[in-house]
Image: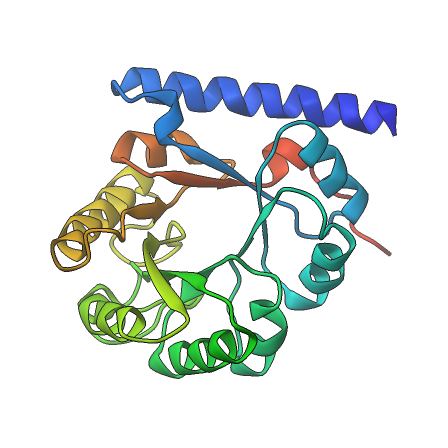
Length: 239
């Protein structure tokens, strides 16, 4: 386990250097950007080691992986983020451990999250997932609300008991006008964030950028980056 802790520590140091350099390059303070480590497919033992190394934000994209892991690590000082596409039949489980759901993209999901949050007496932070590969009113390939639907959905979240509108999230699109143009994509998300904050000043969280493109996200103004493989490595496929 010591070898694994050393490996994670070295990887975290490299990611920290990248974030710090990206901040310096655009005149931002390092503490303006929060690292979220995406621990999907990795065991609870890695989450424990990350906590020992000072990580405070972890993310998962599948409830069947996240729920038992969060339960096993319940005593650790961690904020859990759910970042995957969320089906309404998984809401009860996810609300049990997630502090923030970053993939809110439709009214039906907002209703389900609110109902469950109220039932269990929790406040759940919500990020609207924006699909920059969507048309005027469609959803994106990997979920998300079209830019034109952000205002209405934000109002719904803000008015729903048990929910807190925290901001916006996106995944760099693989198709459409922003394909291969991460900096421009994240810049567009920042423009949408500026518009959102006019009506909802506290919704100032912008989650963008992953292992391959965190520099572009920091340059655009992201407040949170979601990094998996650069910290945990590439896990060998089973079978």
